[in-house]
Amino acid sequence: MKIPPFHWWRTVFFLIPAIAVYSVVLGTVSIASSFVDRRGHFAHRCARAWAWLILATTGVDVEVRGVERLTPGKTYIFVSNHQSIYDIPVIFWHLPWQLRIIAKASLGKFPFWGWHLSRTGHLLVDRTRPDQWGILRRWKGLVSQGLSLIVFPEGTRSADGRVGRFKGGSFLLAIQAELPLVPVSVSGSRHVMRKGRMMTCPGHVRLVVHDPVPTSGLEATPEGARRLAERIREAVRADVDEPPAPAAAAAE
Image (cartoon, rainbow, N blue to C red):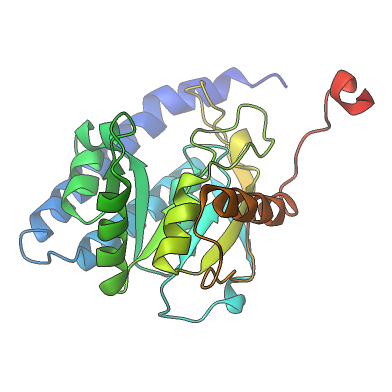
């Protein structure tokens, strides 16, 4: 699809400067608040304000379904597909829970946004030196504070909108911690900002929240985690508008 040049100019000369200002101002307030509020509750309000401003400035409207399936105030692990950088503001603004993300440690080095993650209870993981028991201990610590988690188990953004394989590591930790999983389907965000492309466009995104899946009593083994990962992936895929499969793949 050919993108009008207007969107490129709009991104470079309006959106990027605006988002930079939002990140600097709200990131500074968030980091400052962390010296008083170690749980990061006020910082999360800053993150939600940042998310709303980005969506409003870009022109992204979001259709939300299924939030009524959840119990307000209960702790969950939200498991989502990942189409775009915009998935994070979509989820942060439209899920009214105290959310903390699980992400690669390198994100903590980014000015303001990364510093916010490092200071306010988000779980940054060094993928080159994974410490399963240390991560599990930190998971339980966050949950004991009434914080919910958001996981993108594909490990990267989808280049074509299809839901990739879900890695089993997060699911094994969820089983060990006996935390309920909530499949979340995000559809349409890749048209707002595609992977590998700087330009953004206004658009419509659909966010579907599915019924929670309990993990208590499930087999806490790599095989058990893989089965759970595939079960959650199929639930997520059910409400994602994936493009048609290539002809060669469809013929197999």
